[in-house]
Length: 177
Image (cartoon, helix red, strand yellow):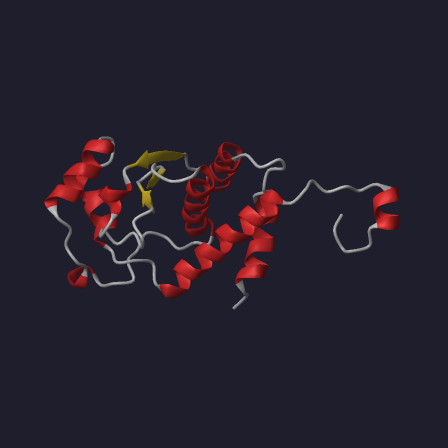
């Protein structure tokens, strides 16, 4: 099995990280790569707390023909982008929507949480919301990989643009181009 760093290199070739960084452009590239539209929905983080979304800051909902990323609206822009890229990492790493927990063992959510998310996202069926919010997580290894993927994307996005000049190659031999 190949490590996350190798998977990241392969994925960042297939879906290049925009330079300069632009989240909307990256989301569009991931959507084109997956041949499925992706929509982003900022919501009150309190709605996500206790729903199997880790710290309650983001969630990927795979609908039949599209993907929805829900993330906390009450955070910094950088953190919101990191949350979105973490969810994109789940998509690109092939984590799918299947639960690591058998359906009969999944915890139930409160009707209040289900109603709140359904009101914020009326185009998503109650069954889809209940299925996604009912899972506990993607499993420790998948969460770690998605988090590492997000960290690597954000670090790459913050790097200065590559320079490929003779002057740069001659005087800057630190491996960066």
